[in-house]
Image (cartoon, rainbow, N blue to C red; front, side):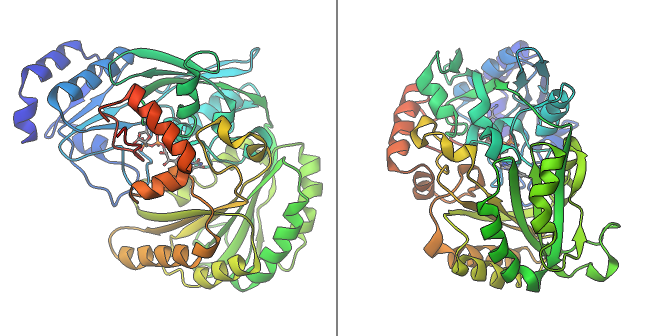
Length: 463
Ligand SMILES: Cc1cc2nc3c(=O)[nH]c(=O)nc-3n(C[C@H](O)[C@H](O)[C@H](O)COP(=O)(O)OP(=O)(O)OC[C@H]3O[C@@H](n4cnc5c(N)ncnc54)[C@H](O)[C@@H]3O)c2cc1C
């Protein structure tokens, strides 16, 4: 069916107008470019349009409208539910557009929409600067930013969108528009959390802040049986911690890596991973009580380049494994939240499953909730219950574990970060934004994409 639809005047017109690569089934590179990060997603688009510039984006959008084929938009390909690839449709792939231009005097960076987080970090750290973004360098900047963007620097500098100055975007009509506080301010509001619902972003402009290059950062591990006491100590200690400090709690089986003592390999462990975004000396002082708590089995929290810390999780979340996730925000680590967490962490089967509990707050919570479409500013912690296997073996069981754990936390659910949703239906998307913001996003959708061309996402329907 797809081949017949593509053999048309529309395809000839597109081919004539397109500077980048157009890849169809059977072409070299088709399998490489249809793959996304989550190996459990296996879809076969009719056409992959690897854009080489804004004109290509306009041409690909026009082609999708002319043919009526579904349109998936790809930045880094890290959507957990695989929204950036589709069966039988068009993938508008921004992955070849990775330029990042830093103005060190103005402390700003312009990034093309195919850039990965690591590319932004490397370009900005070359000037001792940074934009707050995520914790795995091979994640796409576009999808992450459009959902909000949480990461190591957020408690000090806010979310990725809190340092976003302006955006260039192509609409469903093929028009290039700019959005900032001064121009199309309604769109700028929606792009800061509303995902890919309104158009295809071609460029982001960020404010930068001085950072590092050395930071005090890394994980400290304890045995899983210490987790109930550790998490109770942690919640009291962290309540007094400055915004320079951001922490993530991980429960998993210790991986068989060189730096992990052999007797721990495969054993259930808990880690508190820290990043102190101030001076190394202050970081050492602030982190001392954590380092001295109980009997850590491994302490890798030390001064290191920020870039090294940013890449720390890369090997734990590689491309191609099978992933499933349920997520929720909670207000606090109450005794019940802690006990539920430990009980379910004890049931992790896969040697690869590693799930983060993100400490929120700080600068994130000081921006007014209605200032942007992002809606988890009041969260104390974000649970990201990630199940992971090498392939299909054991995947269903691990997915059930994730679902059961999430359900057990349901008395404490207070919302969910839209970038941590799977394919969970309209009600969950509405829940992620809350009723008032959801209605505001709907109105914006009616203005910018009334026909819902951009629907392969956490979709806000125009009707
Ligand atoms: C390993 C891993 C680590 C992560 N770490 C973090 C983290 O630290 N912090 C955090 O906040 N989130 C994190 N996430 C979640 C992440 O923010 C989302 O998965 C996000 O969608 C990834 O963006 P992407 O461009 O790679 O995704 P893609 O799959 O390419 O795109 C996802 C969606 O974004 C939209 N989109 C992408 N590009 C464009 C564009 N140019 N214009 C308009 N819409 C576009 C589309 O709707 C698309 O369906 C992580 C995800 C993974 C897999």
